[in-house]
Length: 363
Image (cartoon, rainbow, N blue to C red; front, side, top):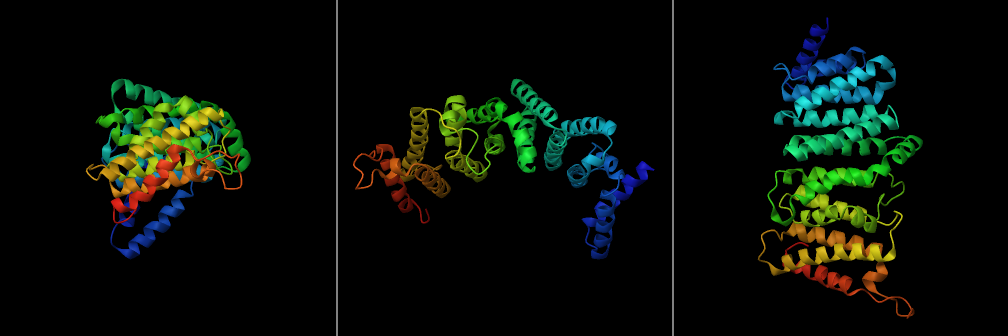
């Protein structure tokens, strides 16, 4: 019976997390064997249900079993069963998002949704992306962070899943999805814009997820390096994302600050088709000005946000900018009088970076 099988799995999960080593080994062997069976499809759905018998650790285990099942056995699931399975996962995900203790299971279910859509082709993946955009729109309209969280998690999971596919599948999916990137980046932009200027928005806690989702999409079609959009293209299409990410570098939450630095390090790598030279130069100059502003706050030594972590991240992004355009940073070599001189902004940034180690024990 289905109920008996689920009860057995729950008991095995309890033993796996228990202190008896012998029972742990026995439970692990049973769970690994069960995950390989067709029954695991329905069992995993039962484990993620909103049921008193499913504490958060059981829900996470069920979501993880489900993810492994999709990754390894999706092709074996009969076609008529796939649609109802996805609908059941979607329903479970919507419910778990309302349970703060179940956030890890909910995140794993976002990955399940992405994995099923990517394995079902471009049309299914595009439909999931649209569903995420709809979740975001409703979340912004109602002020419910759960909907925006769900949208960001799905967006990131889709991009990560696409990037994990073999080259021909990844290329086909990227070609289908990349035209929607500006639309998708609007979700991250809105989250980051809500916190600009010190505004304590309810969305501030989502900035790390927003930066991760944005960067995952920007890297989706990168191939050998670089991002889908150049700094100039990004500044033209989603300027608020750039401005918000610059401010996020000074966030008190180190996860947000580090994610913002990673965002700029990736975006400034060469590789993407560029906008006009003037637009690219203006975009880079905007980032440089943002770094200079952070540097001035650090050197003033009286700003509680100007931490050692911020100093380190300013140095990391400044290095990436210099690697992108050494001539702009250092100017012409002595034997080439026709090459352009170093820009004043880059010279100021170089001077600032050299002074930062003095503001902290470690740069």
